[in-house]
Image 1 (cartoon, helix red, strand yellow):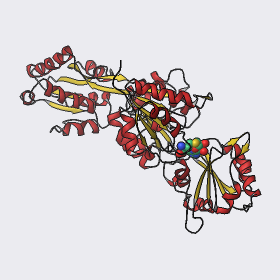
Image 2 (cartoon, rainbow, N blue to C red):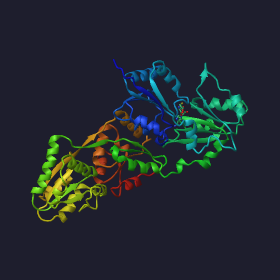
Image 3 (cartoon, rainbow, N blue to C red):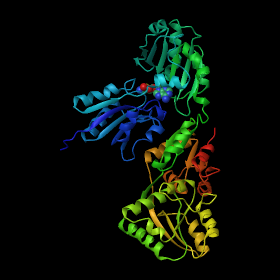
Image 4 (cartoon, helix red, strand yellow):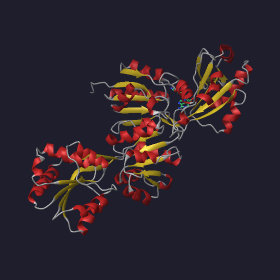
Length: 508
Ligand code: SAH
């Protein structure tokens, strides 16, 4: 017997742009145990669903298989009865033509607790992103949101006469299939055929498009533009403002959708900078790094410190990533070792690049050496020239690191120890991977950002069997680029190994 009942949150995901998900919606989603979502939920937002959560897709648009409403209601009930925190994630607002009310009925009947988190409805936000204010004092005093789908026995239930008399802004959801009929009926009910009207496709997404016409010409122009769903129809004088108010396409990276493959805790600055320029970003952390914890590994770490103190001659500690630095210091803390013991060995520090140098600074140490080109090979090569007598090198890095540093050291017969301080794990979120695969295939994904060679390997190991030549890869350095090229990707290498320099590689 399960005595703890779960709870359901009915959450509006907004129209697609991740920035339009509410703060509360995001919080609830990030702590969900089960997420039941439909086709309207964008990839950007789907990427927020914790990988630990059970994901139930009830709106598979691609194969036209839709889970019947009764079944969705039943799923929500059952998952809640199992004691789960269930999020029912819906496009736009759950109560605006979202059947949210129907989903609550069964929960109420079974005494399941729930909350409703409203979302930004496409009805007003999609026009806003196309430069159409749904009301404007000079043009209109009311807005009507109408379903273009509501028919009984093929007869429209829409009262066109009433709508035309209101002199209002009319917004039709689910109306593309009935576009011709809607326009014709409005004109038959007395609407001026020159009234401005619009079809707005995939609003708020990177690929949003708009067709601005008149009620008389809208159907023909939408056909010419080969409008796809989801799309809304807007009728009213306010549509004439679109061309002067449109703002989204003016952003430097408008229309661009990017996948960021960095580990989650590191991705925010890259993602933030891309979004600030108007790009849409799907975060798909392909790897996860964790500091070592196993007894044997930690013992090996302690031994490496002893070794540094024992060996005579010049001592260098090398870090090839910020994570290496972070793990090194957290291991010092865990093992209660004192940094000053290493100072007696007169140790010097070498770092691969700026980010690693910054991380080291956080611990009060200014690096003694950093190569001009940020890669392991250059680090080792450059050091050969600055080394004094009998150098002894300790590398603190990932369990599986690249071979190039040690190759240089070995070639030059320099003694070293290679110590693992963290593990790199590939993260596979099949649902997200499938979405991104489709995005690459149908060209809604424009770029994939790779900040390390292991990100490329992890990414390709998830997306097996696809044609990688469709991928425009932005790589942080030559080493990463080399691997991406091997997979046949179209590669751009950032001039410098910095996030800003990577952002500069993304263009329209
Ligand atoms: N609850 C949703 C509406 C669900 S009905 C809301 O509040 O937005 C589904 C209809 O919404 C689609 O047929 C389409 O007309 C509209 N729609 C949803 N998202 C859209 C988007 N991003 N761009 C254009 N239309 C959208």
